[in-house]
Length: 488
Ligand code: BG6
Image 1 (cartoon, rainbow, N blue to C red):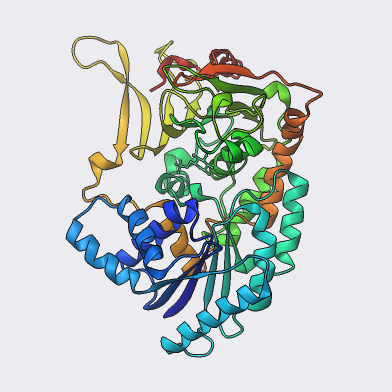
Image 2: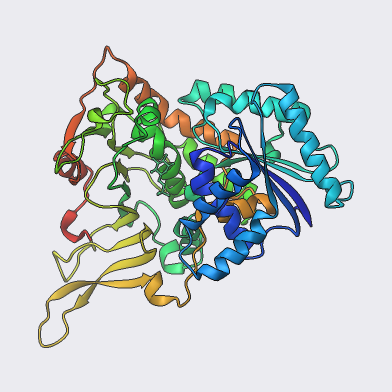
């Protein structure tokens, strides 16, 4: 744990990620008293800005995320601003890094930080093209020899196995694995952090968590917004790299892994790696791909101004089925679905159990356990019950734990706040380990290469903006035995 003091450097401080996520998350921690007493936050980017401009920017980005008491927020913001400053510089020049180092040292001196406690956290809110030069510059010029160093990195971690391994090699030549924190912000979400608890603290789930009782698992990510304004970025990656290889696969591994020996980070990550090793690469037959077209006055993917390749075949929707070849899961399809520009914004895991064998109540719908990640966190079970009254009909109801109904004064932290606190504590549980990343890419790389190969032209269907996705989806899911009777 970083006791007492830290300097947090936000690299790429003038960018979108810093504005939307990093600063609001840091403020969230500050507001709740979770930042060490002697904290200083330094924004670093190429843009030249005065101190005032920088503070205005931070204020603006934080205010858009806070809806509580104005006066209190303003007072806290003033205090928060007093612990931050800005330094502009280049990403590939030693002189710039040396100036940053000097600025940190001065601040450490002013804060009277003891030797051995000059801890530095480097948060890279940067495009991937500068990950390596920045990490090099930091290691050479800004690395603290009198305290701990932590490097926080955001995806994309490469585009396939090879590029990810290359990046990994470069970074691991500079920072030790236990100094690197690879963020997958889904691991900071409340319901994702709850998966292990639901599985391992409840005897009735724990005992039926396998192929004997579970028919299929669906992990769904739906967004109502398209890629407007982000076409340049998105088109290089597509929906599979954007959210499936990382966010949804992380959720899958928590659902599917064996019980870790303890809740220590390495024990958890060992189990995640093991289960990923049991998943063969996804085959094209287990994939359904789509791209949205304009509808209801909304532009199609190809009509976006920020998109360069107007003939792009990048999928904005995908349904992919993964298989886990081990004793627990053989034959159980794990269906991931993810799409932009759909009819609904929702992320959930739906575990559908098998029909009750030899049931007296034939035809009653299957049980399901649903973990709703967002919006409105919930755990609920689809449960068969006698229709109250004189009837002997079965009806399906919910055993429902919707958080905002159940817990009063619910204050769920933003995923980034939760993860930044983990970084300060030195807890790696919710970060992606190097070998885990490698396994994740192995599952997706062959399929991605097939999709990217212009000579193959894999089929990509279209769907209208704001729809449920490609009409082929129902057929696709049915193929794996999912019974749609009890959706919702
Ligand atoms: C990001 C993707 O990693 O996750 C975005 O790049 C996506 O395309 C986002 O919209 C979803 O995150 P959240 O927290 O809004 O569900």
